[in-house]
Amino acid sequence: MVLSDSEGNSVQATLYEDSIDLFRDKLKLHRTYYISNAYVKHAPKSHTLTNNAFQWTINSSTLIEEAKETEAVITIPQRSLVSFSELQNYVKTNTEIGISLATNAHSSLLLEPKIPAADVMKDWCEVNKEFLLQQSSKTDDSSSSSATPPPPGDFKDLSTITSTTNKSDHYWVKASIALTNFQQRFAYIACNKCNISTGAELEETFDCIKGHEGKGVGRSCVQVHLKDNTTALPATLFGSIANKFLNCSTAQLLQQITENGNEDIKNIINPCSEKQYNIKLKPSTKEYAGEMKCKYIVDALHDVESG
Image (cartoon, rainbow, N blue to C red; front, top):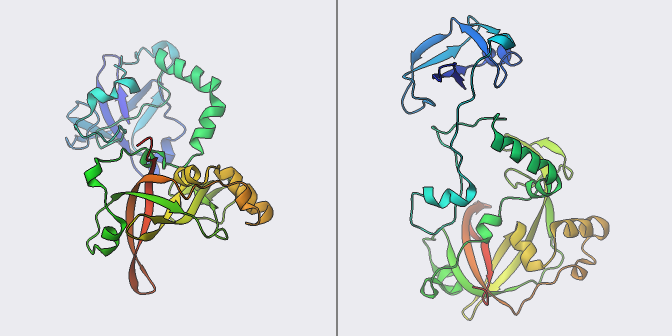
């Protein structure tokens, strides 16, 4: 964490193991404290959060006492905020791959900042609470479905892909999609963080086998065959990409599977086997029964007409 004094000086402070529990209820954001007997050492440049050459370690020997309100004179530092619409100005590459945000060792997160912009955001979140809840329940595959198709010369025939030994990380193909197996499971309950299948109920919080706490969310999944004028190739569609092809929502699929098995699944899905798509195909090679096999996942799906 970062501590600041009334003169605007800042220092990075760290708590480890038992010290975290010791001061969990004492240290609060935007409060003023008297702190003494912290361990001081040089701050490594690769992990520092401030311009201070030193950092503190707070442990059981550190004395911390909250200052009275009349003694709390620290002002919140001014911050230069950047809107999402301006992020393009900070991109460090000319490659048109879209925009994303990521933290690194030099990033810092300020929770509940006491600034006017944060108050405006809180009001907006309160008004749009239902919309935000709907967005947070979606799995994170919308970014890949919006990938931009390459120039026409970069598309591959399906037969070329299947005959290639050294697989690329992805291919673009122009193909139709055939759905022939209506007895497959078209949706399942997955971990909201890693998409792995789980036995948890929808919206249930559980300990994921990947080592984190997850929540059960619905995820669509459909096994299909891609076809062009050279051959056919089995592939899998997940999430919003599967929803786009089936022309129905995950909630509809889960409800149908729960109520009637797959008996009436044809009544709610509307795939078009004659339609041509620009498809981003991702190969996934894994060992099955002692043999290395390659499966293909549709990572992006575009109508040819809208290209």
